[in-house]
Image (cartoon, rainbow, N blue to C red; front, side, top):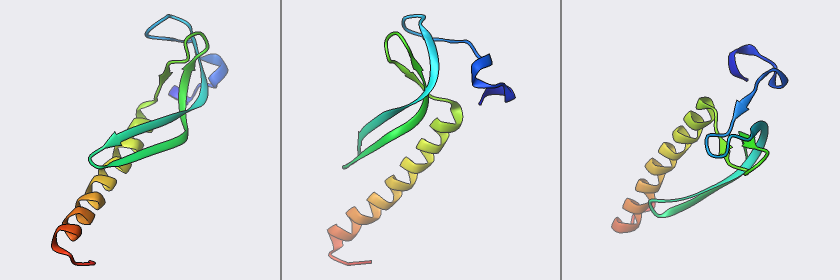
Length: 87
């Protein structure tokens, strides 16, 4: 929620078509560094006209932290596969 205002009090405009954005959830899929991530319901502002999502900074930060952790763990798995070790 932006600046402590109720969702109904906010008027947010789509960057692409100028339609009205409403709070909702959207799926988000990413192919990255040897793995695939799909979140089924990411909170977003969604355009009622074209469907384009706009994510709040907090949501983007959370997604980036999660992807960073996955990058680190994926590198560990890749290294373990190269050396043949299990740890």
